[in-house]
Amino acid sequence: MSKAGVIVIGSGIAGLMTAHLLADQFHVIILTKHSLTTSNSYLAQGGIAAAIGKDDDWSKHYEDTVTAGYDHHHEKHVEEMVRHAPRIIDSLIKLGVPFDRDLHKQIRLGKEAAHRVRRIAHVHGDGTGAAFIDCLLGQLKNRVEIMENSRVERLLVDDEQVVGVQTNNCKLYADYTVLATGGFGQLYTYTSNSISATGDGVTLAYRAGAKLIDLEFIQFHPTVIIQGGKAIGLASEALRGEGAYLINDEGKAFMNSFPQKDLEARDIVSREIEKQLAAGRKVYLDISLVNHFATRFPQIERICQRNNINTKKGIVEVAPGAHFTNGGVQTDSSARTSLSNLYAVGEVACTKVHGANRLASNSLLEALFFAEKAATDMLNRAVTGNEIGLKWINETGKMDSIKSSLFLIPSIDELRKRMFHAVGIHRESRSLVEFLNWLEVYKNWFMDEEKIDSTQREEANQYLLAYLVTSAALGRKESRGGHHRLDFPETESDWNQKTLQWGLSKNRTKLTTYI
Image (cartoon, rainbow, N blue to C red; front, side, top):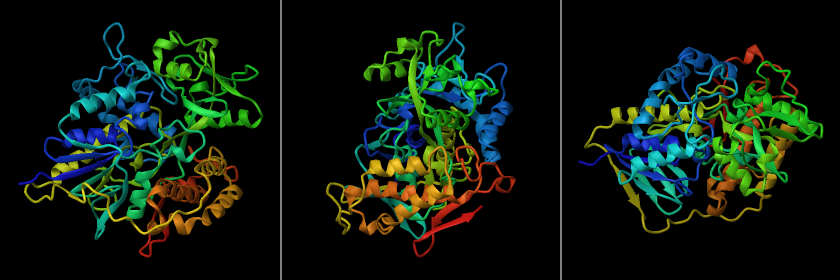
């Protein structure tokens, strides 16, 4: 009797945890288009949020989450997640994650924006993501199959049921497929994201017929490190939790008039920085009050050293950059998508626990919590002896290529610049419509998979995503969280709990509905 087969697409924390929880009972293969450690998870400087402090409880964590996200949540999902957060911390400790501890050997808790108390657990200061990944990879050794540098080009669908994937060199069939591909920060000129964050999972799901939601809610991190007009890394929010603060090139601390000052929610801080930049000012993070900066935040120190930035001067130039995708593939409480046997976990999924603006350090928590939910659901569904396991076709050779030809398109940098201008921190109807009109010229190409050459697939997916995100931003006629309309500047009660859902109609054209 064969074991059930599971394909996990992506090697971030959500994908690796799903694989870990299934590896002993399922035949699991992990596909990743780069190396195993090329992911947003590995770059994650922030920690994981959990109400484990003596002055904290799950209800406070819940309230901070829905406040930061402007009440645009699935409230039951949020409650479940924050209630389980302390248990998830315990399970990570049992796996061997070496959380930073104080002199009393208690987990040291940091404070980040929009949290009322200290509740962020870190590893190696600002190296939490890498520590989680390294721990999980150690747990997975010799328990799963891994295919690096393997790009998934499409999901294989039979009667609205996902039966496997087509990669750049084989077809692979399995009982279940898990999207864990991360977000799409690389759609923007400035981003904190890994080079892998091009939105492949979202477009794979969309092209296969799955539903997408909340695409307009892109979170911009206020403090992406800038040098020579380019983004070179991230300055963790934990810095501001330890005393760093924002100033402009006149030395003015421009966040002081806000109740939480530099620890306001990310959307607020990003917009205030954008105002300074629009006025022709430069913005800096003053780190002079952060004790033992180089040892407390070694990853940020290394970023600065590699780029010849002397942190001993006490300031680092910053600007907002695309950081987190709040929307994505619609999932239920078990991480199931609208297509049978297809799951989505991590940033590629929209579980609606983040609302319109993610609370800091809830992303690792969400990834781990819904990885558990997905794994549990698959384990409950599988019946040993009735599964197909894993099945390859043309495993050792290239598949017959789809008939296609190279399409002349502007550079991806041009797309990113236009995206940042039209669908960035501020949006308004005129620029959104102009950008959509520009994209329409290429729509027949990026919408039709048969016309996409394999060498242009990633670019085509980004054009498709730009089209969908821009359409969503044009459709939501209010401002809420990470979506800020200059022509509709207020958060409107008529839009409370109203969600834009995107999918393909039977004739393969774009379709949107309100849910």
